[in-house]
Image 1 (cartoon, each protein chain N blue to C red):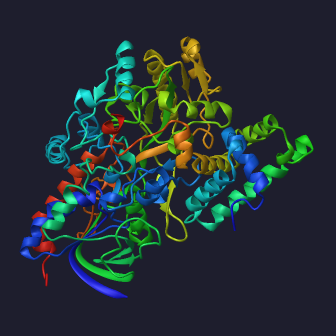
Image 2 (cartoon, each protein chain N blue to C red):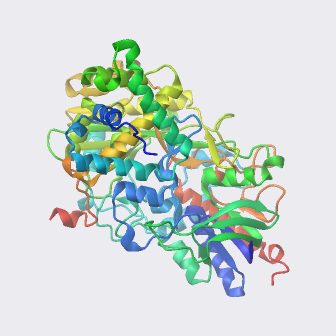
Image 3 (cartoon, rainbow over the protein chains, first blue to last red):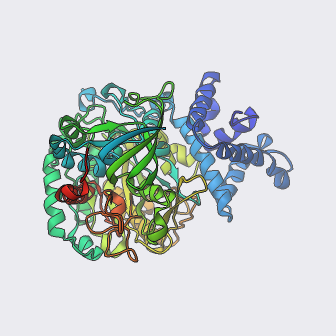
Amino acid sequence: MPLDPDPAVFRAVVSTIVPEAAALDGQGWQDLRQTIEALLRDRPESLKRQLRMFLRAIEWLPVIRYGRPFTRLQPHARAHVLAHLQNDRIRKIRVGFWGLRTIVLAGYYGRPSAAQAIGYAASARGWEARG
Amino acid sequence: MKRVGYDIAIVGSGAGGGTVAQELSTLCRQGVRIAVLEKGPRLRDDEFTGRELEMAGALYEDGGGFLTADGTMTIAFGCAYGGSTVVYTGTSMLPPERVIRRWDVPGLTHADLDCRARKFMAENNAHFVEDGLINENNKLFVEGCRRLSYDVQQFPVNVKGCRGSSLCNLGCPNQAKQGTDRVQLPHAERNGVEVVTRCQVLTVGEKSLAVRVTAKPAGGKGDPSPWEPGDYQIDAKVIVLCAGAVNTPALLLRSGIGRNLPRLGYGFTSHPAFIIVGEHARPIVNFVGHPKSYYVDQFAEAEHFVLETCMYFPFITAKSMAGFGAPHSAFMRAFPRLQMILVLACDEADGYNRVAIDKAGRPVVHYRFQHEAIRGLIRGAVTSAKILFAAGAVRVHMPVARDTTIEARDAVHLEEIAAAAEFTPGKTPVSAAHPQGGCGMGSGPSDSVTDSCGRVHGLPWLYVADASLFPNSLEINPYVTIMALADRVAQRIRDEAPALLRGRS
């Protein structure tokens, strides 16, 4: 089962954590998802289940405060929701968000095209590659 | 289950296992059979691509993200032929006299360790990188420190033919770093030691090991194991555990050996760390050149932190910065203008932090941030910010500040920012390097797991030779000290070989 049974929720969360992700094309999203799936492949099923539950909670928790789910919020309200989770007084919720954030950052910045976009160009040839 | 016999079985091939293998390999000439059992793979030279996630997955336990029990810290340690020496930066530090004296292990002197450490520093070509090969990320650190009159020092590093890829932590793509995978293990193999990769030790029994050899996964890196996949029993007259400070105590615990060793798993320490990132107005040379050339340790005793230069890769940098969204992305987009400093807190062995096992026998690290370590991280963050601004940074990302982006105009308020700093486990991104302890040396079972030569109390055939021997934090990068301790263990085994290996076939 993929991490993101509902791609809209997944994309909304990823784009809130890394705003540049909103500009990804279809191939970019596919690369990002594949990167995350590869990363989680050997991880315990319980961890993947927790991440899926966390995503589902992110979608529906805002209904209490904003009257609508995460995917229908404006970007600043989405950021507000995630900031709440990040700062929650319950450690398990903070840890859950930290885990999700880590996976998202790996998916986005773990792609060679993202490294290239931010100007990171380390080479095995080191000084020689600088010319 | 297949059954294999050796005289000496060494579990793990990092700084400890590689050293023991080399130092015992002279016994092979007398017909002594020695095997090194390594859980990780052995990569071919052309498989070190420098691609971040790919290499992290191939060379680190849990891809470098081994989580503590409460999920608030990750611990990075290697899992490959050469262990963590494949993924360190090669910074080579002699054991500090004040620390060894404070350890107060009967029979262990600083002079003895120092002498052995120097032998391995020379063997591994530890030296100062010449000035012309030091990049701006490092030079700016020196400039900032000198402006603030901090005592900045250069790391000796163990490289040979370094091309400055900056990819040390992903395994050197140019085979320049002189870890055990390049020096001690090949030496041991030339002398007749066998190395079995993809071989996980499940339990330790009376002079025996239950191990599982796994097949190379489809698309995975590294050579297949020299042994057929499957379960084996390995009989050995002497067993030396060098699986590291997380896996060695866990292996002993799941083997039931802890019953008579109440200190087993306790005394675990590490270097909880985060990075402080400074953005300059212009591009600097940061991801070319050796990443770690300088450090400041003048604050270690009084303020419990050490600063080191560092340069990480996009994902690790992103993960190590706090927060998300626009402020976080702004720093990431400035990558070619970033200067980085690693803040390492010095923690202390206490009654809580420890290695245990779960129901399945897997290692679990129970770790609580100590007050002094938190204070060390906050003071280290502020000191780093001062250095970055003194070096010309226009803004700094400080993960413990309420507003994590600090502009240069606010540099004068850094002490106020420090006073209001927030360290929140589960929010503040902390990763630890250098796991230590869990099988500490001492005088007897009531205060330790082994004696000063790594022999497990009450079990004359069982030794430990890795960082788990440390009875308390070493406070510095540990590999040279691990090698020195492993050398002592090997000498003890060599000295007692006639008795230990009696009845050898």
